[in-house]
Length: 130
Image 1 (cartoon, one colour):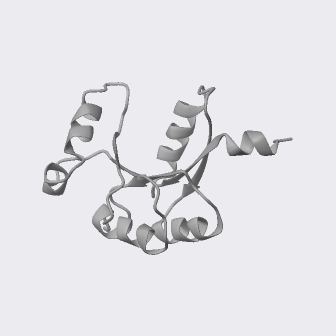
Image 2: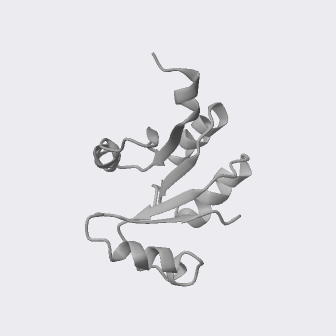
């Protein structure tokens, strides 16, 4: 049984990606973490994510840059902000060639992540109010 204290010390992450295999890979990567405890929920679409955010509190959202039908973070982040989510949003992508990545505040973080060979996907966190 989970105690109230352990729930408060758990980091709740919402992983939004239209490919379930990416969620499975993330779960495997964090399975070995001992501190802090991390609880990850999966959403296959921005619509599903919006519903989950309305019903529960999340400490972090990891958001696929491109969700079908061709929406990228410039469209989906404002939707998350529009329902009142103010926490950090990490944009996750296998392709960082778009000019909008080079022209934003997150370029340095993406470049640093790109040098990390153990991560198959690039990740950057931005708390911009898009």
